Image (spheres, rainbow, N blue to C red):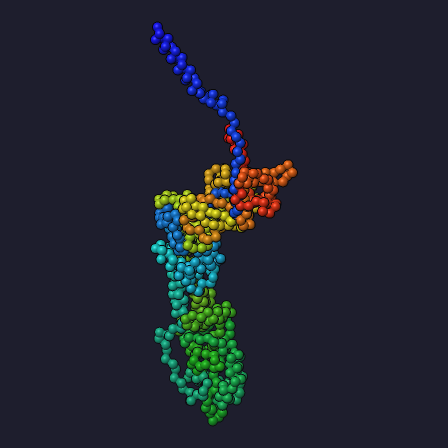
Length: 637
């Protein structure tokens, strides 16, 4: 019994001890009081303070060209297909390099600022032709004597040399396989042969069986006398007119004189002028044995002059007509054998004038066109043959027409040769303002159809492009310093704002000027609805490495900064009193607090520039109150 009592007593004492020594959490929380308030302090700094704006941008080139060729020439049937891609993104591009091959045709990079907008063919003129000529010369292919801006033979040769150096055939300007030039050359050859045939037909031919000339029975005819046949001489001697001392000419234009008088007259200039003035003195030739000219005009005749020896009784013997005698430059051939005419007129020598003005005009035109040989006159029929009828055309007219045909054929050949040759299709050239250029992106692969840009090529200076919202645009201006940071390359490059657009521009994607924390994406080409923004360009102080091309980079723009080092404190250290004055609370090493009145300046990165109103009242290293620990705990709860 005593043991039970003792055990119970021990348990009671243990419970009391446990209750006294153990405290519950609730009791502990209840027993805890509020902590003592303490000040949060910061140190005054002296440094350059800058206000910054952070955004995203894209590195772009001064010129960016999307290459999307669409061949549209001979042999380009069907859809265009990429057949070769020799370059990769980031590769440098030099002038004269093949960028891609589409349907077996090259796309060539050339130097120039004017974009290609048409096929350049032989005979073309313009500034784009001059640009092509300069690009060819830069590659070592001279254009010869071609005038600047004119696509001539020298430009054709230089373009052919460029394609030959690249290993491609030229694109023909006329897609007929050279048929037009061959046909024009054949026409020239045929016209040349026709002219030669016409000249041969018009040239006088000697008679096949010419009769022997009659013997000259006159005694020593004086120079210029016209010998007559025996029958003609006998007939004239028996006529009463021959016995008269003087007689009028038997027909208009006939000449009769004594031997001495004839010699004197034939040697005088007046006689020669008279002969030139006679209609029968025109330049013509009547072939020996040919028929008289069928024209209805009356031919001029030159009757026989008296013989050079007079008889004792004063009877004069007439001189028969000569054969082929030239008087005063007019050639007179002997007519057929003498025969009495129906009217009794004595036969003379027909000078054979041109029968109609049209034939004479054709003769003059043919004689001035030049060429092989001399155009014959109307009377120049082949010897032994009659002159052709004027209605059927004359040899002179045939020669003239043959020469005109040859001239036309040569003109057509020159035009065909000028139009033929190589051309530069618009789909086979890309003009870039500067070299070396860079390949930006390659969007196609070999074998794929061309339904958009195959690749992009950038040339010129690398810049950074960004798009701003309205609130950011008001903070930035040209000339502000910028830090360009590439997270991919781990490099920072200093730059400056080149321009900030004053007008809003519609861009693809969301408003790139907005974003959380200033790290908004700008300058990229995000998918999404169209938005608007203000374009900003940033130019590096030194040229950006080629590796920056196309990258999305971070831009830190210093919108404002202090003029040199200044005293700065956290923004929370500055407070305004009821009187509107701003001040900071300085804490001495002993813990004493004092209020220092200041003027604020530039702010940035959570700090503000402060200038003490009383000089020396605030210095670098002084501790200032930014808040209290109690306030911080209350805010955190």
